[in-house]
Image (cartoon, rainbow, N blue to C red; front, top):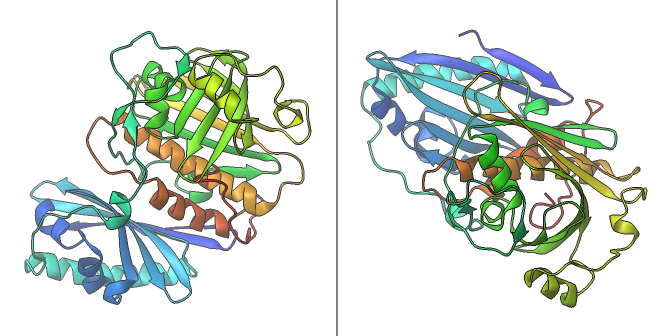
Length: 376
């Protein structure tokens, strides 16, 4: 395919595709780790860090080029007796020059894969993957779950990737920041009822968000514990299977007594203060909407909006967009149904690199300032 170039602010990128005579197994051996990629990419061995390696098709990596770090996405597909490689490089200083370099690099890859120059071996998860947060998938023994008291628990989650799909521009794919509104749209490969359960039950939330206690129903209050902090909120609207609106505050609830009440299933205090008043200019508001994908596939279209207080800095807005994107990707992971390691920290790194380069005006955003463990 002719390389596809895009630009948003100072961030640019390139997408291209190449067919190879090598089988998918042979091609995978040449893209399975940083050292293998570096050999045909022309990069030093330590410059390519693989974040996700899901044999035999998906690799996501960071490529350090001096002071700049680029994001690489490689997907291997079967194509008749051969294979195809889909490539995307994000956050590129000069996309046109990068496209020319990729053509030369893929020529080298073609020679290496045809000559079986890459040893075929199984790839273990990276240290970063193994050190990530525990994720637990939602239970599938309660088909009527529609938002309930939450107290923790869960089972093992699974990775899932759906990158090579529209929208192509990363400033759209990784969420948009317009003024005081952060918005992300994602297609989740699961039925709306399963997605709703993952949003509103303890087991489901533990699979992609954190350990949540409280009540996710109209008027309910909740708290989430991350590895390095807390957040809390009060539910303002809840239409099971369709809509969840809540305030979002940084830090824990008023005190440990309230947290104990939540764990016991009791209602939390009457008043959490102005920080949870939806009419207060300082209040963060989060809205999640679900709808069945009209294509009949059984998937769910999810839209998340996080409205921040007026005057919130660019760094925090970009950090929220990156964190929510990483969380929602974790949601898709948890619903994929296959065992795998968590990727939240690595996904946050990827999204942060993109949002650091692009803001709602198409200008550099400056430094990223994510909150606790995700902020989300």
